[in-house]
Amino acid sequence: MARAGLTTERLIRAGAELADEVGFDQVTISALARRFGVKVASLYSHLKSSHDLKTAIALFALEELADRVADALAGRAGKDALAAFADAYRGYAREHPGRYDAARLRLDPETAAASAGVRHAQMTRAILRGYDIAEPDQTHAVRMLGSVFHGYVSLETSGGFSHTAVDPEESWSWIVDSLDALLRDRTTP
Image: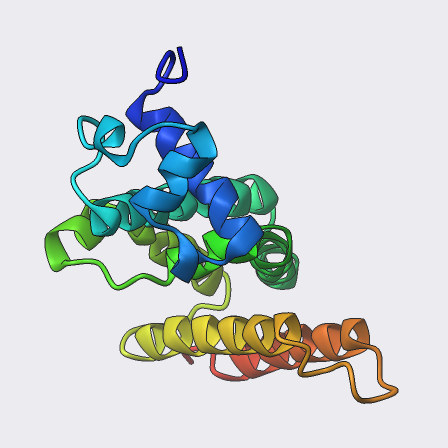
């Protein structure tokens, strides 16, 4: 009866939970089969390979993160939108470290184009419209925000800020304030 109820969706969700528990790099079909108490072969009717599983987890994480960010952005503009986006992104990474790592998986161009990654870029561009930033500066700003948020979250979650007396929350606020000031300064005349 161990196989009862196995679906692709259930396996992907369990894989995402496993990624949060043991790290995205440790997620395999074998590890997932052990989690359900089934033989590896039982999962191959739902997933082709560990790469297929990891891609599905990445897509799941991108969708989940996009939904969280969209909820945070609703009704906000300017600095409020920027801070809400940043906080949702950081909160997701802290709450779901394995899924966050999964969302960074390099996808083939076709899969990436059909993923929620496109929504992430659209939401970032929507925030930037509030600053009236035109191309090509808008693309530069999208890349800057992604780099700053990812860099901070990566350093923070790896313990990079635990060796100083300055509270990481203070630094986070300082960074968001500084990004807001920079973006306002770059507004198209």
